[in-house]
Image: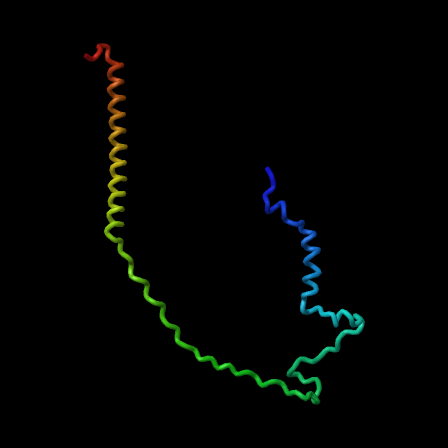
Length: 134
């Protein structure tokens, strides 16, 4: 079986990974060119988290806490279900015809089975009798 067009033109996974990995590394916000130029032996000084106040000489005070006042609205009850759509006259007539056709098929099948049974019974009676029927 010949390979499909999608399989024929798909590049190998290793080549795709080789091409995409440098692009992903360059576009990463955590890696910048300035960080790449600095020597790795001198890590950045650690800063104390805001609010703990490592020193009292910080010129900027911590921001005031946000007070969120949400107005809770009452949820509306769900809308009532739409009224049930009634079938129009043509649809009802079509369903009636389908029902009549199904009933007629059942009756025809029963009639054919009865006739086959009668013919088999007549054939057996003819074979078993010693005198031919005239």
